[in-house]
Structure formats: C-alpha cells, structure tokens
Amino acid sequence: MSGNFGFGGMIKKLKKNPKTIVFTEGSDERILEAASRLLASSFLTPILLGNPEEINDAAEEAGYNIRGAQIIDPENYDRFDEMVNEFVELRKNKGMTVEKAIPILRQANYFGTMLVKMGVADCLLGGATYSTADTVRPALQIIKTKPGNNIVSSCFILVRPAVTGESEVIAMGDCAINIDPSEDDLVEICGETAECAKVFGVDPKVAFLSFSTRGSAKSDSVTKMQNATKKAQAKYPDIPIDGEMQFDAAVAPRVGETKMPGSKVAGHANTFIFPDINAGNIGYKIAQRMGNFEAYGPILLGLNAQINDLSRGCNALEVYSMAIITASLS
Image 1 (tube, rainbow, N blue to C red):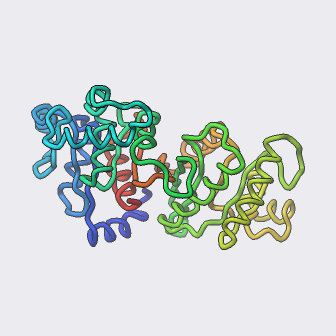
Image 2: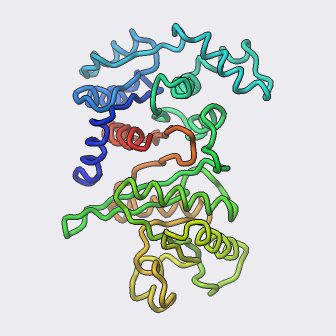
Image 3: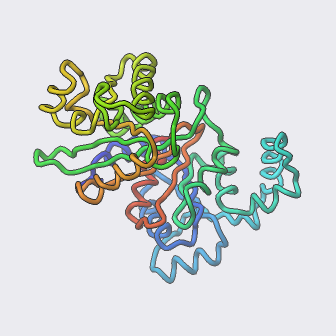
C-alpha cells in the first residue's frame, strides 16, 4: 500500500498469532519472490504447491532463498487418501466418487483449498496464472459460505497518499464476482464490504451508487438500489448508509448537501456499493489508473475461510501485500 499503510498493524497482529498460507502456483517467479520475503520474517509461513525439484530449481535460477518453506506436491502427499475421502464426503450429494475425486484433487487449486479445509493451512492465495472462477469454484464447493451468507462477494481496497501525510483509503464492492446482484445480494455485499473496510482502518460511510440521486431518474436499476439501501439501513443500523446516489453526491460535500440535504453519508462516503459488476469493475479501474490509487483485491468475502485471488498481471510486491491481507483477514 502507499508507504506502509495498514501493513504495520497487520504484521504486528500476525507476529502475535502467526499464520500459514498456501500458494497454489509454487514455481511461479512472483510467488517465489514473495515467499522468500515472507520467510525472511516470522509472521507468515508459506506453503508452496508443486513439484519440489521444479520449485527449488526455479527459486535457485531466479536467486530467491526459499529455505524453510514447506513444499507440498499434490502428486505425492502422505495425507492424500484422507483428503480424497473428506472431499468425497463433502461432495457425495453431487455424485462425487473416489475415482472422480483423485484427478480433481491433483489440481493445485482444489488441493490447496482442501489443505485449508483440513486445517493444514489458515488461508490460500491463488490465481497468478488462472482465472478468478478457478479460485472461487473450489472455495464454494469445499469451504462454503459463512452461516447467514448466501453468496461470495468481493471488494477492492484503494489507497492513495494524501497531502496531509495520512493515506486516503476507500472500499469498493462488488467489482469482481457477482455480475448482476439482487437487492438482497447487495445488502450482503454492503455488510461484508463495510466489515472489510474496518480492517483497513476505515470507519465506513456507505453509499449505494446509481446514475440517479433520490429518485432523480427512474429505472429497474434505480429501484433496485433504492430498495437495497432501505434493507441495508434496517439490517445494519449502526453503519451510516445512504442511497441511491450519484458518485458526485457521494464524494463532493457541496454536491452532497445540495442533492441530499441532511444525509450523514452524502459528500463524505468512503465505502461504495455498485449496482452491478460493469459499474464496479470500471469504477475501481478508473480510480486505479487515473486517480493514482493503489488497488488491493479482489478480496473475497463471505466464505468460512480466507481464500483470495490474484490478478494474472500481478507483480511480486502485490503477491506479498495480498498474502499479508489474506492472513490478516483469516
């Protein structure tokens, strides 16, 4: 994050309670660089998945010291039979058999997720070389959603250094998972995104965004955001939530006061809920590319354990940062 924003506190927390994180792409150079950096400290132990010889050769060739890392080969794991049986039990109502389970669990994304399920690791970070769907699918099948949650969602934390020296931090959800969330989905996304924002020191003020402010336009999307706002306000009475509102009303105090007089959120929002993935994905990328915000995420929300996804364009510093974030949330 900008400077060391947020990481000091997270690392302090992890030093008191060290965690173990699975990296599904153990021989990827970016993963190896991040793992070597984590191994130089003592608050987060990496487990690298893959062929030990290949991983050690790749590390040596790239010049990264990964001594002390746990390397687990899905092709040769002493608890594999136990893992297969547990997976079959979890998925038996979907027709899973031992014969079907073996090739599935040889895949690093499924194997790594089962390590979290079995308590071998606290959390998982994957996706440096495969899609978000390939990270989310095994998580949904194996880890499942928390009690009371119906969906997995995601948020991005965006950070920008401010002139005052304090970093500006905002949260945006859902920009990566749910294509067209329903009113009830949006309520869940709101609650999870606000909780995630708090981990990063944000006191959430939540704006449900739209192209309309307090009924200035009419459409199904506007109605959805109006209804979702009311439901979220009822469900989370302790969080300042308002909407539907346009982005300028959410962040510009003068516009907020003009368009939504008396609102506790308008003009001062720092946690943004988008009507759909189009708006969310475009919105966070505009902030990242043109607003000079650093974007961290997608941080997956609503699961029973912390499983996170990397962007395929990530670099080693992003892997390191996301590993600390993932472990802090686990």
